[in-house]
Figure 1 (cartoon, helix red, strand yellow):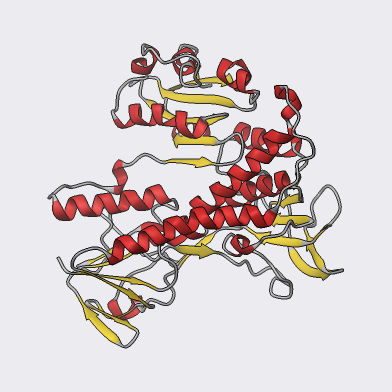
Figure 2: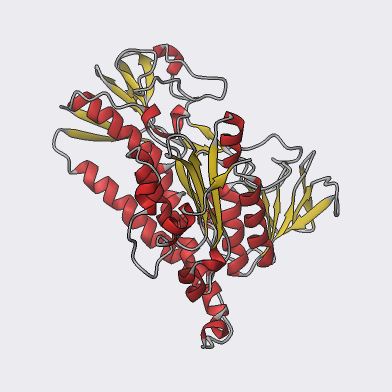
Length: 431
C-alpha cells in the first residue's frame, strides 16, 4: 500500500517527547538521588546529595531525543511511505489538505493525540504556568512548586521534584487524591507522599491564580489551612483534551462527543466509512499501551481478517510514583457497585520478604475475585515492582482462567510475585 504520514510537530507524539519516556527518565534520576540520601540505611554514605538540574535535563533530552530520532528515521526509511511535515485538515471525507497539497485516500487514520487542559481559573492567563509539556524545558530547580491536580501527572511530578529538592504543594479540588482509585489506595499514596514532605491540600474550591512577589499565589479556599498557597512556579495538571478542534472534522462529517473526542465503534471506525480514529483522540484510552493496542486491533482486522474489538481488552495502567501502583480490571468499589458475590484479599508489602530486603515496604497488594467463576476481577499492587507484578494477574484474566492457576503455581524466590499464591489463599468474602 502507498502511505502518507502527516506530522505537524514532534515525531513520536506525547509518549516520546513529553510523556512516558522523558518523565520516567526524570523519575529514575529522582529515585537515584532519593536512594543516595538513604545511604546510611543500606550501610554507606554518599555525603551531601546535590542535584544538577541541567545535567538531569540533558540526560532526559538524550533519552527522549533518541526515541524521537528513531521514530522519524524509521518512518522516512519505509518503502512506499511519504513523510509530510505539516498540519493536515479534512476537506471532505476522502481528502486532506496539508501545506499546499491535497491528498486523497480511501483509508484515513486519525491519531492526533491530546494535550494538557488549561482550566478557566480566574487569573490563569495572568501568571506564567507550566504544563507537562513545558515542564520538559525546565533546567533549574523550582524553589516551591505548586501543582494543581491530584491525578497521575500531578503526583508523579510532585514526588519527582520533591526528591530533586523543591518544596512541593499539591492542590486537589476533590476530597482525595486519585479519586478513581479505591479509598485505601488513595490514602496510602497520600501517606507515601506526605512522608517525603509533600504538602497536600484537598477539597480545594474556587481555585484562582495571582502574581505574588515574583512567584504565584494559588487561592484554594480549603476547609483546613491557609486559603492561599504561595510558590515560585505553578504546574497545571488537571486533565487532557484531544487535539481535534482544528482538523476540519465537520467538513468530513466525522462525529465527536461533547468533549471533542472522536466517536468510534468497537473496531475504532468513525461514523464515516473509511476513517478510523486511534489513540488519545478517540476517548477509549489515555495511555501509550491503549494507543498501541488500538493499532493492533485495526491492523489485524484490516490485514488479517480478524474481528478484534476494544471491548475485549482489560483496563490496566500504572502510577509511577515510588513505590509504583499497578492496576488491572475493576476496583473494589466497582465490584461492590456491581452487586456480584466476590472474594477479596489484601496483604501488606511489609510482609513481603523481597520488599523488606530492599528496604521498600510501603504499600499493599489487593486482589478481588468472582466467587462463582473464580476469575480475577481486578487488582491493585502498590509497592516495589507493582508495575511489573500486575501482569501476572492480568495475563490470567485474559486467559479467563481461575485464580487457582496462580495459587498452585511455583514462583521464584525471592520475588514479589511469589507472594501472589499466598495472598490468593487468604481470600475472604467481600462484605
